Length: 305
Ligand SMILES: C[S@@+](CC[C@H](N)C(=O)[O-])C[C@H]1O[C@@H](n2cnc3c(N)ncnc32)[C@H](O)[C@@H]1O
Image (cartoon, rainbow, N blue to C red; front, side, top):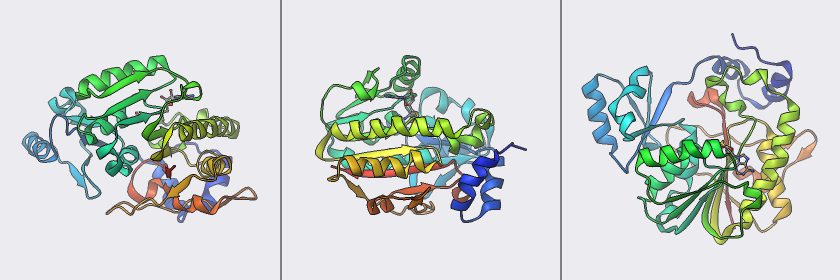
């Protein structure tokens, strides 16, 4: 049984609709999921191949390239080895998907915190390898994994940069992903060591960094451009409070609604936290709780300049 700190329960149980289901979901290992890489294959081809192997896979109604399987052999298939599929958490597929329309005519796209490249490779697939993606990450060691994944997936429209986003030179991008470094509370189902390092202090320090990252990314956005801010954590300090901070710094930022997706339950954000009420625009952002869709936890905000 996973040890869950009391302070964690005190913070989040009041926010969920079903305390028992939420706590129970944190004990269950995340099912394997993958995305079909349309630069190398397509959903029908992969379905036929896996049927041939006798591996059951389930297609998600909200994204035809997204599949889940209980079979541990997925990672040992030729499709995984050749980059025809990419092992990726379901919720991690949402940020690129939310700017799918914008990507069709985007010339310059920034993946501001890109490594190891789950979302960069998905962006490239959605752009059909057209336009240019700047895939940036502050960690040199992680950019090596990013490089490997770009090569493996056949991504040829991406340039890697290794910068702290806060020092990024002034350029303009049509679309930006800020998949922020975070306390990763929503990944507990695949990381049982998470709570050994969990502290409120670390949440506050991540929040300070995230506020700097979101405002810097907004400055790099072309007027009319769209940015997705996402985290895999539950802490309102790292989610709603960061979007609220952006709106305080740039009152002209527009927080667009996150559209409904068939078969995926999205939840309303937190409107008040520790005595503070967030800007009303923050209500357009969405949370994903692990017990609703059998996924990790996630947060999404869609921002237009
Ligand atoms: C959640 S992970 C990104 C995962 C990635 N988007 C993907 O889908 O594969 C956050 C990343 O932010 C990077 N990071 C942390 N601080 C940063 C900063 N100041 N500027 C740019 N990247 C940063 C970390 O090295 C880490 O790789």
